[in-house]
Length: 260
Image (cartoon, rainbow, N blue to C red; front, side, top):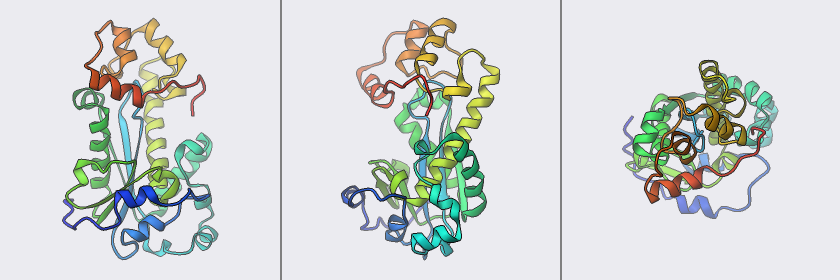
C-alpha cells in the first residue's frame, strides 16, 4: 500500500536518543506512532550477513486490544514475556513463539530478496526491498517502525521511524524479528537438503569457519552470494569495488563455529 500520511515528529533521531534499553520490548514506540488508533507495523530482517540464501523480512501489526501496561499484557498473554530480539532467544523457544505470534497479532507479512537481487543491488538495498515486501504483505498501515538507523527509501514517502536496536525496544519489531528468523531458518534447512556438505542446516548460511571451509573444499553453489568476499574467493573471482567490499565487511563479521 502506498503510504500517504506525512512523516510524524516521532523521528529517527528521537528514537536514537531514548534512554537505556528496558528489560523487555515495550509499546512506547508504537504509541508514539499512533497505536492503537492507527495502523502501526514493526519491520525487521534477518540474514544480511549470510554468505548463502535470501535475506528475509517480516512485518507485524499488533492488535489494538494489546494497548495495556506491559505487566497486564504479559499476564493476559504470558508468551509475550519471552518475545525480544530473535538472537537472544533459543532456537527451540523461537520455534514455539513464531506460530504463536502469527496466530495472535492483528496481521503479519513476510518478504524476501533473492540471492540474484542481493548480488545485483547489494545487500543493503536488498534488505530494504525485503522489508518493503513484508510491509506490503501485512496489509494496510499508517506508520512503519523499522529496526536500524536508516529508514528504507521505500518508506520515506510516508510516516516511518528507524529505531536503533528496535528489536530490543519495540514489541512489534521484536515479534517481526522472531517471525522472520524462524521463516528463514526453516527455508535454509530445506535448502540444506538440496545442497549437502555446507552445513546450512546448522549455521543457516552465516560465515562460520565450518561454512568457509566447506566453501573452499566444495566450491560455491548457486545459493551463494557472489557479491560477498568469501564466496568470490572460493570461486577465484576478483574482489568487488571498494564500496561493495566495505559494505560486505561491515555486515559479515567473524562468527564462531556454533550458530546463534
